[in-house]
Amino acid sequence: MSIISRGKELAAKAKQSASSTKHQKNPDDYLLALDIGTEYVKALIAKKGKGALKVVGVGKAHEAPTNMYSGAIADIEGVAQTCEEALSKAEEMAGVRANEVVIGIAGELVKGNTVSIKYRRADASRPITDAEMEKIIHQVQQKAGERARKEVALETDNEDIEVRLINSALVSLRIDGYKVSNPIGFKGKEVIVQIYTAFAPLVHISAIERVCDELDLDLVTVAVEPFAVCRACLGDNTESNFSGIVMDIGGGTTDIAVVDDGGVEGTKMFSIGGRSFTRQIAQKLGLSFEEAEKLKLLADSPKVKPEIRKKFDAAIERNLEVWQSGVELAIEEFDQMETLPGQVLLCGGGAGLSAIQEILATGDWYKDLPFSRRPVVNIIEPDMIEGIENMTDRELDHTFVTAMGLLRVGMDTIAGAPENGSLKEKLSRLLKN
Image 1 (cartoon, helix red, strand yellow):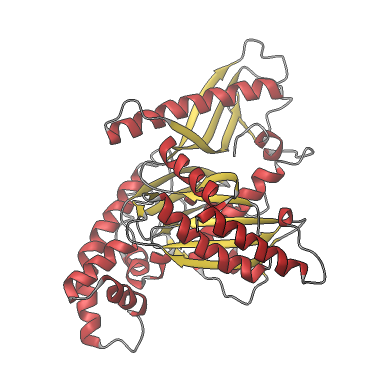
Image 2: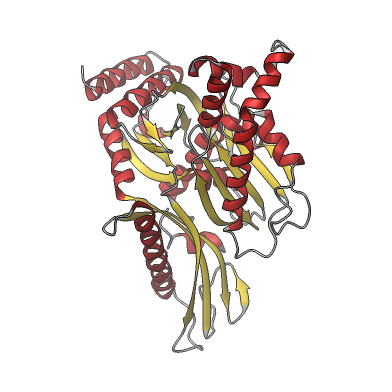
């Protein structure tokens, strides 16, 4: 039986289950988020509506070792099968099959940067219009796209590689040196716009689209995963002044985003995640990969003998040093910021490794970076995410935060910005999410 056949059979079962309830559930009232990671696929089904998104279905399935490579899909059929496994669990819990899906993307070839452009207006006395801002934003996105294409071409040694815009968000806007949130109606000569844009190779996007086709799902949008986590932290308040460094530590990659005063300054990724720690544990302790993974998850348990814990610490010590260097190098690239935010927020499976939390909280990695003081380190827990409620009996932890952020990005895309928005909301209609 093909993936599509199984998907249709599952849809029929979900429909039958829904019809047996007192009120028929409409699939269009629900949104699915798929966090396709190197180690796991996580699925969340949430009910749309005014107010908070309500999570009604949760699913999780383990990836085969060859399905993903450095955060990107390497085996479309294999990933589709794992997604279907996670989906079936979420749909059984929710009693409905969602048609619309938002999927995350990560990996070193995903380029998220803040680009600035200076635009001199011919007539400073004429108020700025929507059409003029659309022209300016298009110029910024073109400039950012060419920069991303050159970076990916250099890293892949492929001059002909194509990239596609994934996410775009306003960081800051100044008119004649005066900072504004909504430029429409202002007069002035010089407009300086900073916009966060994220691009990914077309081959990666196409792989995600193929997975959606296999599962018979309507793709609402693809979102850069650290951007989605930031979006979750910002919540419903478009004027949020949230600032922080967000680290999503997955199985294959560590994804870092910096948010300053509610604006995403950029996203960086490097290919060291939880799986590299597991390999070291397996090698040093003579364990299988599966045994090493179990030990990694139980390392802080009192059930682990002291001599085993000592070997465990020695096994991951070198990896910790390399991972810390990756963090420093990634954050160094945010050279447009005079001072970095004073808090580091962790999520993803690797965030549960106490050694990672400890090295960030007590190490000297921050001293050569523009911090005003040692940053405070915390794990992002789902109950910290505003506007998303878990209505299931399944307890969600920090490993589901990325999927929650994907739900938020999906709703942004579906709903668009309110027509009566007064500040960033009105301008965001001109940005492609």
